[in-house]
Amino acid sequence: MPRVIAPSMLSADFGNLDRDCRMVNRSAAGWFHLDVMDGVFVPNISFGFPVCKAIAEVAAKPMDAHLMIIEPWRYIERFAALGVRYLSVHYEACNDRRLRECIKLMRDRGLGVGVAINPETPAEVLIPYLRLIDFVVVMGVHPGYSGQAYIPETTEKVGVLAEMIAGAEADCFIEVDGGVSTANIAELERLGAGVFVAGSAAFSSADPIAAIKALKEAK
Picture 1 (tube, rainbow, N blue to C red):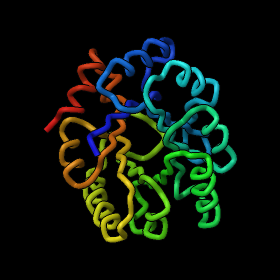
Picture 2: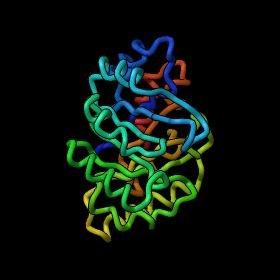
Picture 3: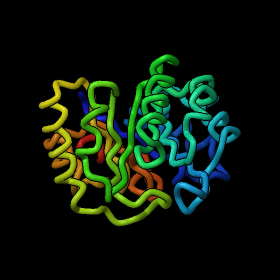
Picture 4: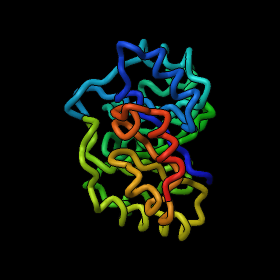
């Protein structure tokens, strides 16, 4: 798939959210990324449905919601109704029955079905699910806060996961969330990733449009 840059709205200026959403619309970004945190599954609270709805009203590109929350199955229908195109839940937040329930709910609602894994979680845990989902979110940082340093072992994990997907003859792509930069994006893409979440790499720049373009074109 062509490289997709998905700016994380968690790093946007919430005092100027409409402005930053329109900036993403004008930029080389492909998606809007919504990091939803509950303060339980991860040690931080981000935003809920009112902010997601405000973004949805302005976003002219697909929305990709990443649920870093407990009991994600309770909210899938509401995110589908909001107009989210891609939705991911955490492997660590579900037992096998609940994860399969989430996958079915997302599939039934016409969502792109994703499962996210934390840095400590080996890629191999996803083998039973690869043929059931559309994408895997590989965390390049510990979930909960933006601006963390990239965990180098993420790069190898992406390569392992890509081999697993090929071996399973599964039709799913890899998204990397956290620590993505112009220094590592090309290597991650070469190993098999296609979607890259950019938080501080985009919004902390003096020129976010130029920063997103640089990520899109980095070789």
